[in-house]
Image 1 (cartoon, rainbow, N blue to C red):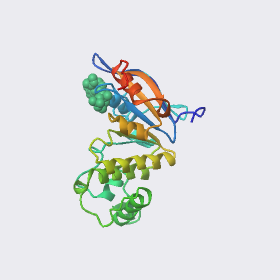
Image 2 (image 1 turned 120 degrees about the horizontal axis):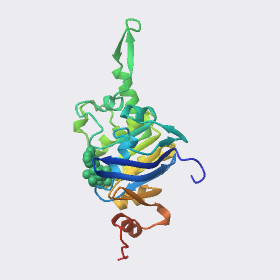
Image 3 (image 1 turned 60 degrees about the vertical axis):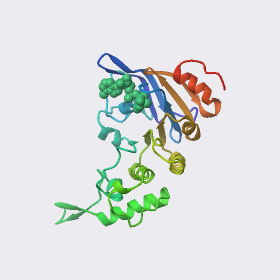
Image 4 (image 1 turned 180 degrees about the vertical axis):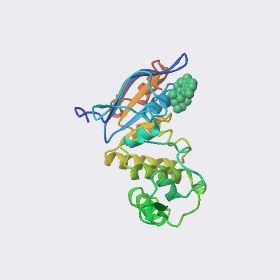
Length: 255
Ligand SMILES: Nc1ncnc2c1ncn2[C@@H]1O[C@H](COP(=O)(O)OP(=O)(O)OP(=O)(O)O)[C@@H](O)[C@H]1O
Ligand SMILES: [Mg+2]
């Protein structure tokens, strides 16, 4: 990882909301095949920084580089076209559609009819391919489930969102509070999904308040406080105590 160029470099990023500086000259770099955790108190600027990367907000200052080349990301579509995908457990899916429709959302497979003038949805192929990704890649069996995803568990829903990112060949996968509403077993499944994504060369950015989860899943940990980057540590060269100290801005004694 060291030496090689990061997949994503955000440099000296500033984002203001009126008079409030939510992100204050922050650098973020993430490499292919690693998981970077982004931590900090409520309001530290984590989601805002990530929304700059996913095209929801524009930075007031600071370029974003991908493979060393500056990119413009001014919409979610532009972010997706670059392979930057975000998974939010609550927001990612359309409740009224089934699993395969959600995997192919915005990217539906179609069959041309009447020459090439009309296209109809290829529901059978989408169902088959969605089942494949879910089962082969993620180990989730939703065979026969054609009901709306509204009925599925949090972990199953999250797997579908991740299946979509895999199918769309994400290079960067951003997970904002991915395990906050998951049970122990479902959280463990999410960790193993992250390992699989890393093995496939995806860069994973993991935002969480749960330091046990962060220390389980992350290779490096970037700490924001009051919109500023106050430190970045390799997981195996730091401790929860040090990270908590960086988050709250004081030295915390070991209990
Ligand atoms: N659209 C917005 N308009 C105005 N202020 C905003 C907006 N979005 C975020 N902020 C402010 O910017 C700061 C950073 O918010 P942000 O959502 O990035 O924090 P966060 O680190 O994700 O916090 P949390 O852990 O609570 O999710 C906060 O003070 C927040 O109130
Ligand atoms: Mg947030």
